[in-house]
Image (cartoon, rainbow, N blue to C red; front, side):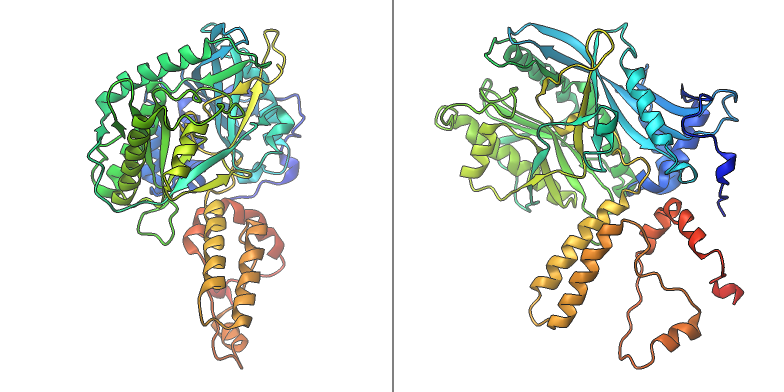
Length: 505
């Protein structure tokens, strides 16, 4: 059983004895073990630990690309010091341009995997940690290039990280498409891993050309480059998971259609949050990057729409784009994925999708995957926010920032919505039952903890509670409970006066 540390044994979160440090390999292994309950997705714990070691050696992470930051006590050496909070930062090649089109190659640090062990939560350690990280990243690895800022993707809304300087991006939304069991378009070809390097270089050249054009805008522009390292990180994670689940890996890393200079292509990744045989797993085919040659609305702020429609002008690209999207939907169906998600497509792509009657819905992200930015000026202070362009999924290369809350909480929100929808639409349901279930599934997501519906007692007690009732339901999402054991620890304190275990009755 996990021990509970007495409050007086812990340092105050404002103690000068706390410092930001970099984790040793042994401390990284300890962090991975602690985070396994929250972030192992469809993997077992031992396999998740293997995955973390594997991912630490892929191009985006190796050779200093990834840094693991920890909040510890100054007076204790590695191996003996307690880790009060941890996170990672990833080095990302980026571009910034002024209103005259002058381009500067800069660095942006991507912050991810913020985790605070259960014994140390709600004591201010995470806040202390994030403040220190914000300061440290300002000059971290600045010998390579100027550090323009840092970004993160919050899974706890827009407020918490804003307190430390990471302000929500002006837009956070995506298009979601259903999987379709259909033959793939003959117009499109698979993109395999060997194709990625050339496509990423073409993409970067297109971006640089677009950003070098002077405009009448008043703000600078910044973009994280969709380079090969980002794509390979996502694909490495995909290959590891699919090999474990299916004994094989996807050949197609995307699809491309059209003649040169009129091509459209998408690079994607398969993400399994739960085993595909689980009920409503919510697994996703993420389109990491979508490129359409000749799209004048690309690589510009989302608020900047072109005057008039380009659909007639780019008729050949319309066919190429629709062929690529249909390939993505077919790929999702073949690999048992529940959705295809495309983050913030250009205005031209939106028009094509709408006018082509491709089934989709638009999702505004208010609570999860909220892209948030902290920008620095040249004097290590915070800079007025530039406009971030190409806020696409390739840049989100790690785990969500929930400072240790289980990812299964968000799956519970999804399932609650699905069940509420089912209860309200099934014909023949009794009104009283529909009302009761709607109340239950509306209340449950508000708590995000395994508190509601708690019932404890031995078999005789349960039998007594069932007197006079024709049916009594007892249920528990046992998998979710087991995976959120860290969250259960503080609940035990609520029942300290009595032992409810049937084994000791």
